[in-house]
Image (tube, rainbow, N blue to C red; front, side, top):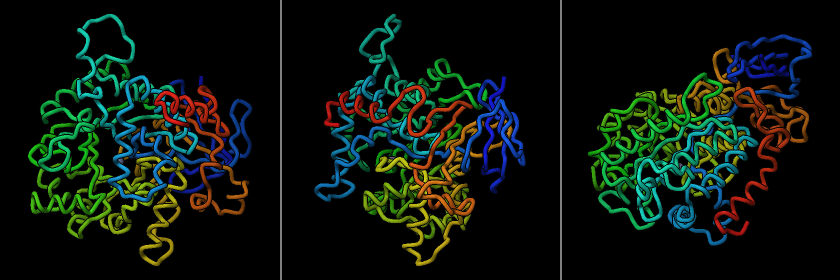
Length: 464
Ligand SMILES: [Zn+2]
């Protein structure tokens, strides 16, 4: 049995192709990609408009979505925004987080994303007690609440039920600042010591291997990775331990000048230099934000062929600044995109934000070509998360989104220039693992996405 989609036009091998027939097997993996087919075969769904590989959201904190539209009243800074964010984090438990994440992941699919890197640090119960320690091992009851890795399992279930591919970036968070204890509200993020983190991380890998085995590319929706929260939250002496891990490692890097100042004061080095000295700057590393970098930092990250995750909408929302994306790309770094705190979940707008920031800071147009923007959103993200996605080719997951080319926003756009004109409102079809997940803004299994949010706000006892 195969599933087939005939696309009016599609992004194949870095160019727009017409009449593209995609075939996927039962596992949701692409088995054929044929171009130049004039009409849809009778057994294929005809997909009008422009089809591109599903966007990869390389940086997400799912629960931050619940703050959207609630932090603009009094101005403030990144740091005052963080206080509000902590108050929402305090309300999360495995059950409520699954409800919240299901809604967020559904909105993500509607916004053009089919994969997500979930940078996850709310590991433990509110008082810092690890889940699974309240109840003897072997207890037969298996309600979501109290087993080990309960929060991580809740996120994974939410992703699998929505149909978004997740790399759960299990985050190490040990200190509340360089040489500072965790605050009370941060205690549920921490593992005490680097050994505590490494042990819990190994246990998580084992748990997920049982519960969410990785098989064929198309049918494997849950994957584990690692993250260093930041050099504020993991002591420099512990960073080298991340070289022991295989696969993707992510880190928040130089989002705020205050982080750079603290790093210079404690270590006499920039955050990038601190990471490099520990051996963790390599081609598996994704540096998130990378906003306030020195020329030397750019050379280090680009020389190692690290990936940079730019989050333009969040960086604008939090008044973080505009990072040197073009300079990083020119020097050899790979650029990808993330929505971070989800001020919007719109893969197009995020991409447009990258180019808009570049134009505003440089006074030049065309800093990233439309093709480069599509590549950042797809292949760049796939590399960041080490997932078999990002291009429509045989052997990769059948994950794609279709944009309307005849809407009031997009009509007249030439080929791939649609990446600079379309919005999430133009995403009319989202497919992952060969299955339609969202059609015309409605999730095919979960239904009305606004209703999912109504449930999420009710679960957290927040006014929706
Ligand atoms: Zn972040």
